[in-house]
Image (tube, rainbow, N blue to C red; front, side, top):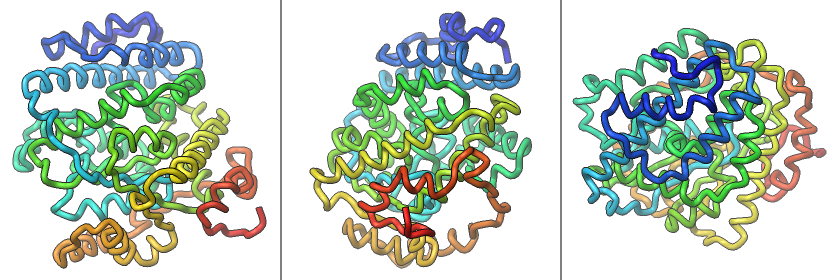
Length: 395
C-alpha cells in the first residue's frame, strides 16, 4: 500500500488521503461535506491521543482510504441511479441492547428467513447495489472482505470465540456509519478520547439519513424483503433512529451488565492489539462502560413516550435456552409470517453454530480494575427498570 500519511501525522495528510481516494476511483464528489468535521476531529485524535504502532498507522490509513473511496462510489451510484432513493424501507427490524447479550446470534437466526434481507459484511464494507449471489465470488470487494477476515483470524484465532464474522453473513449496520466518520468502530480501534467526547454530543440525524440512504442503495433490488439490522449503539440514539425509521420494530435484548461489560472491554482490547500493540489493554475503559450505560438509560427515556407496540424485550437466558420459541414470540408480537421452512432453516443454523465451537472467551472484570458488582451498581437503574436477572440480588 502506498503511504500518504507522513511520519504518522494524520491531520496534515487530510488532503493527500482525499487525493489518493480520487485517484483510485476516478471521480471526485464526496457528497455532503458534513463528514469533514468528524474526520478532522478523528485525525487530530490519532495524532494527539492514540498509541498507534507503525503497523497500526498503516491499518488506520488503509481504513480511512477505504471509507473515502466508499463515499465516492456511493455518491456516484446515487447520481447514476437516483431512483433507488425512492425505495421504501418498511417496518425494519432493529436488534439492539448491550453488547455481548446474544444480539449477534439472534441476528443470524432472523436472517435465515428468506423474506428478510440483512447487511452482509462485505456490503457493509463496500456499499453498493447488492449483486446476484452467483456474482459475489468474482467481485473484488467481496474477495477483499474474505481476505481481510481471514487475515484477522489468522493473526489471532481466539478472536473467533469473541465475535465471528463471515464476508457473506450478517454484520452490524454500524458499518454504514463509517462513511460519515461517526461510529463506535473508530473509538474502539484506538485510544481517541477527544474524538469520543466530541462524537457522543453531536446531532445524529444526518448520520442516520446516510445510513438509511445506503440501505436503499444496497437493497433497492430487494425492496420487498424486510430489513433485519443490528447494532448495540443504536440505544444511545434511539430517538433519532425512530425519527428516521418511524415504523421500526425494535427488539431490545437484555443480560446482566456484570457479565457483559467485562466481556465487551476484553473484546475491544483484544481487537485493539492490532492497532496499539501491548498498550491495548492498559487504558481505562471507563468511557466504554459509561457509553453503553447512557445508551441503556436512553432506551428507558425514549420508550416512556414511544409507541409500546414497536418494542419487544428479549432476555439472554431465554434466548439461549429456547431460541426458536424466542424467535416465534418476536414474529407473533410484530405479526410477521413465520413459515415452517423458515423454522427449519433457523434450527439448522442454530444446530451448526453452537456456542463454544471456536473456543471459550475468557475474561474478568478485575483485569480492567473493576468488579462485576461495581458494574451492576452503576447499571442499577437499567437492571431494575427492565427486570434484568443478575447473578447476585444485592446491588
